[in-house]
Length: 153
Image 1: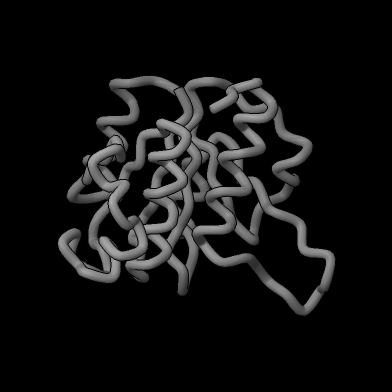
Image 2: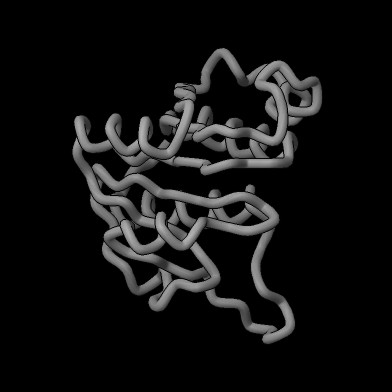
């Protein structure tokens, strides 16, 4: 099963939108603290609307705590970053992959990128546009992996 991981997310509506996407696809959502909001934040809940009961959510108090959890469950660390060297479209996803996304303001820290088994980018056609919104990026990555794995909702 694919898993989505948000490392240090800052903006509640982005996390809420990603939670809704995860609920719709029955994908586990992992949040790595510190978060830029409280889980009870009304903006977070509003973005996820009434889908929160259907989100398979796990919170991890730090990156090392998450790493320990991930290692015990297996699978590859697939990070998404503007610093990625290959396109997500040319990558072969596997069923047990962890799709890892960083914070809205700074992305993933260098140490997490170095530890990743793969760092992918979402190509931008316009050179002045660095990246997409976090919730869009997570949906793009998740749905491409699902498409490749023929996972239909």
